[in-house]
Length: 209
Length: 209
Image (cartoon, each protein chain N blue to C red):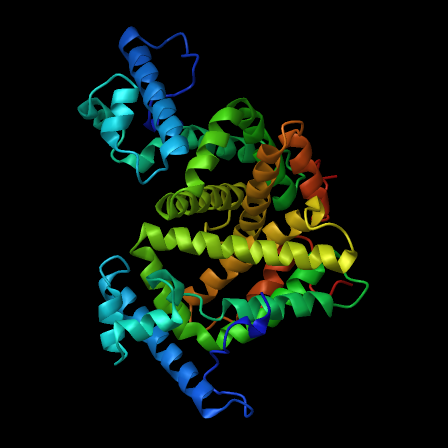
């Protein structure tokens, strides 16, 4: 579950990456982009791996070197972002309660997400077309909730099944997802602002004071 | 979206129901029970409408008089329960803020859910077997969120797209779902207690004081 468990898929490779790794990242990103375009245009269920590979100018065999299945193309940066969330929770100031910690950490991830608005819009368009894909979205949402629960529990040195950590994580990821939806609805909104307002609606102060 | 839009599927029919309506309710409930048993045993994807109908001793044609598709058998009491949620929000004491109102209203639905523990366990077992069914679960979760958002907004006389109402609804339904999961995990827990504790974890007081 470490951020290094899969190659970074950021568009700008870090300088220490070799040629082979950079090429891997480029191919990976091409496949992700091609898949999202086709899912959004033709629907997830009607899009084949063959079509995705053709759109990205590679063979279907190459596709399967990067992804085990069609639905794995979505949320490509999830592992890296969940690692970022864990780090942000661990780095939160000592005085913050769970809810403020969760929002501070999610705001850090939001900064990272903001660059991917176009991709997230395509993703949302694809998700509408397929119940299977909504099932996958649900799994991803739960994985965020589990990641945040465990990070909050670790921060307080309590077991991962801590009810308070679970409750805060479930609330915060629910709010986070709603804020992302609202942010995608209107071009002139700021995801960080939306999160701050949402946090205040729960009676929390995002700075934890 | 009214509670009367579909026949009540409570096991004890109200006295004013005629023989025909009671028979309809019995058939409906038999189909729901049969479907849940088979989904949990054989998996959702492998269970056919024919098998469900046979298990309930009716024809497939009868199945389709009650449900448009296989996945509609799940969450049969949703509409009635969402109506209950709306009523509970509207009836909440005037001094409560959105978060306290949401928890008071969800606690009312929790009382109603508690009788259905066995059915919910079967449902959860079925959902594990199918991404399609998890997609359906996600849709249902969102429909709860929308219902609660609209009810909270109506209570304060603001538009349904109110960000504060959405944030609280997303947080509360997230917590609610996590609490239900925890409640299903262990037989000796009380769903109402779990909700109260979860609400306190968010810094809220369930009585709104």
